[in-house]
Image (tube, rainbow, N blue to C red):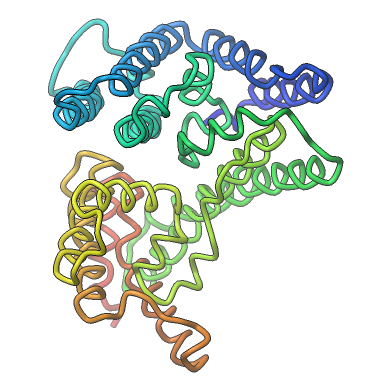
Amino acid sequence: MWYLNMNAVVAMAGMALVLALTRWWPSNKRILLLAFNLCFLLLFSERLFVFYLVYSLLNYAAFLFLCRVSSWRKGWFIALIVLNVAGVCSLRFFEMGLFENPLFHAILLLGLVYNVLKVIDALYFAYFFGKDARAPLLDYVNYILFIPTFTSGPILRFRNFMADTKEPYKLTAGQAEDSVKRIILGMFKKIVVVFWMTAVFDHMKDGDLHTFESVFLMMWFYALIFFDFSGYSDIAIGFGRLMGYNIPENFKKPFQSPTLTQFWRNWHATLGDWFRDHIFMFFSRKAPSKVTAAGLSILIMVLIGLWHGFTWLYFLYGLYHGIVMALENLLGKSTVNKKKVSRAYFFARCALTQLIVTFSVIVYSGKEETVFKIYRGLFNWPW
């Protein structure tokens, strides 16, 4: 969201320059980054600033409590996670109009579905490492409010962010060049490619749809959201690295995924990894059986679907992907080693995976009438 506002882009570029000029100060990327994160939110929205200040402080208190508490640790751990999830769900219900309150404003939901995952990751770290997990308030707030990844990820891990925080600010000329090129590439995707592709998509979907038009729109929209989200990730990774933090990759050649299980390790990788790691860690610390893995795959994908939105379309989207991944687990087909199979077999599996994804990805358009119209068009033969 920030990256379509030139004032925000200039502010982040300025912050990167300030950090580079103050690299002699050991605490520059901790203290200056906190000031930048808070000032950025305050100037963007006072309501959002107050909300996230309170949200961060409350969760830091919960984090410290879980680090220190010795009795009923698992109960407290579950309760704190449930409270965070319930809070996000409540705000979404307000957005949907199911609840009403004059204090609610849609701006409060900005980035919240990403930031609650970071909060929960910190709680996991506190639960498993106890007192050794403690971190200063300054670093915790920076972790939650880190502006380059605030609205749409990639999702940061608490352990990795704290490790980067302890390192002094270092940026070589080569790293700066690579980061700037990454930002320019992301801007080109977001501002040029996505704008043009969206115009084509909107023009076509408003007309009469037959089988070929619907198939084209599904493929076109799939490419559109790839350029949109990978473009955002490129910009976030570039600015994050300019500010001294290693932001994880979010897209790892997803079109070369021979199974749906591997696809979700390569497409929006930080989201898939987060759900897989945390759900498997909670329900099955040991290597699960095929049946258990299949059941957890369905659960994880349903949760990912509902994470995107509280609609039955997103639920069905998650269920659809979960069932396919469950079948891959049960049949022992969840991975394909490119080196051990023929090229023809490998690329045939990749094509099948992309077909499975293409059929469902139109759900991300967010509009039921658009989704239904395109699916109906599949059965509207032009002869």
